[in-house]
Amino acid sequence: MFSFPPLTPFVKKLLITLFSAFVLIITLERFAELPLSRLLALDPVGLGPLTPLQIFSYVLVERVSSVTPMLISLFFMWIILSPFEAAFGARSTFQLSLAGTVAAALGVILIALIAPYPGYQLYGSYPIAYAGMAAMTQVMRGGRMWFFGVVQMTSRQLLAVLFGLSVVQFILSGDYFVLVASISAMLAGGGYVRYMARPTRRSGSKRPGAARFRVLRGGGGGGGGGSDDSDRPKWLN
Image 1 (tube, one colour):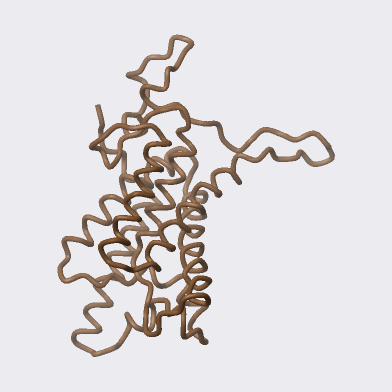
Image 2 (cartoon, one colour; image 1 turned 60 degrees about the vertical axis):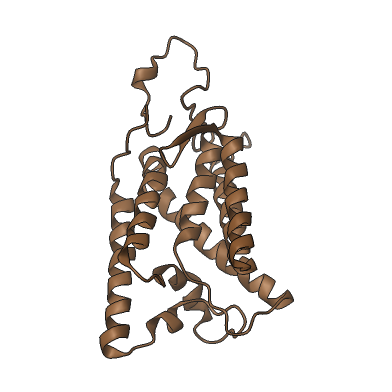
């Protein structure tokens, strides 16, 4: 049975930061008429002095008509990232989030050089969620996972669903930049886990050391050695 993961320290700070930025931006835009969304969102065509900042800051911008979509987004980010932090710590979770953010931005900038869309701006924190989901599919290889706590599936099935959702979103909106950002973030998430899994060389030795983590076997993964399924964290199963 699925149960919600504990809200881990870094994820808690991330959610507070994203929501606080959302409230601050809409407040200053409404009452002070400061164009913060336009300044912080990434313009992949009109590259300029603000581009290095926008590569990171676009995830702070959420252009929604109500607070509900924002809260739903933060809820899913909690479900996705907290298990990763519980397993590998705050530093790795921060690096994973950063990898998804930067990869999505660079992917969009690259595509904009080939197929520019003048006036377009990339915004939203969804690349962090996509990177987290892709990372967990690599961590849970051989096991089964809960897709947003609703449907249990294998890691390969989840990857296929994530890709399918990105394609459906593209069909609905015609926004190929969002498609590129989503896929880039997923590649970054999976790539980061593979980077973590590389054997580390011990100083003064030519022999590789142990990998930084082991693959976690989720529910239905066929654990052996007399392991009790009740001992497994249900938010990883």
